[in-house]
Image 1 (cartoon, helix red, strand yellow):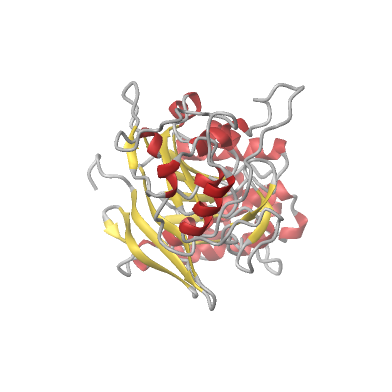
Image 2 (cartoon, rainbow, N blue to C red; image 1 turned 90 degrees about the vertical axis):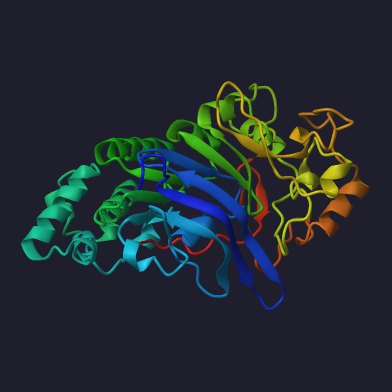
Length: 392
């Protein structure tokens, strides 16, 4: 692999779930890169396709789901061409719920030793000593004792540290962190983020960090991809994105961060819910919720436009940046700055090949009902898959 070649390159990835009722395009044309030693974020509301993207990268999508198009290149080799087995251990994953990731009937040490046996061919005393070292590396005190304890004997923070130790037992080059701090309190969350940053420096790890929390994205990542209803709608260096977001969805996510709203004002939320894509995108999927939408948004599917400023490599998939579709209303950037009327919103929902948005709170059987990145409850497009742990 040359220095210019990314460690991981996902190109036009499409993962579809075939149900008795419909097809759900959970990941619909996603593209991004992760280079050695950097942290790249993938952020969006629940139901946007983040976890399905992670599972697609690791080859963990089971029936009725399937990767139908696109490539996932690791060190230049396309994993979708039956190459996952050759890279098991090179990519590891940390899921959000350590309680599900750890087997309750085996000690923490046994589970780490199993990973060491499979991926590094270590056994016996050598494997136990290495398991203790890994627990020490992730900041678990009295590791020689903890290695013989069961998951229920550890706190939530220690459990997540143990899961990270299991992932490191694979000696990975890429660590996929799928909401690794969501189930933890704020103090422990900060400790886990510091731990990941330290491990990255020491091990030269590349990290794909998946979350709905824009605050975590700001603290933990070098570059970020904003995903909505299975599509990446904005790509940018993290500093540039927070300084000047270019997509209306990104601006809405940033406005929803607690602390950015004056104390005497209500925290803004994003009206509506993430739709369930039941066909290829033909128009802007965010248009029914977008305060800046105009007529063409419900007729044309936006392509990524170069919105680079000051040398920053970035793009946004929005007609506001496409000279072929001038916005007569201007950049609204708020509820009073534009947006579609109710008739246009209904037309958008009907013409975008996704399940109708139910503002009464109902969700189709395939949808998960969870809190979203805006801080409100909403119906996730496709329910995030089981949060059990594992590694490639």
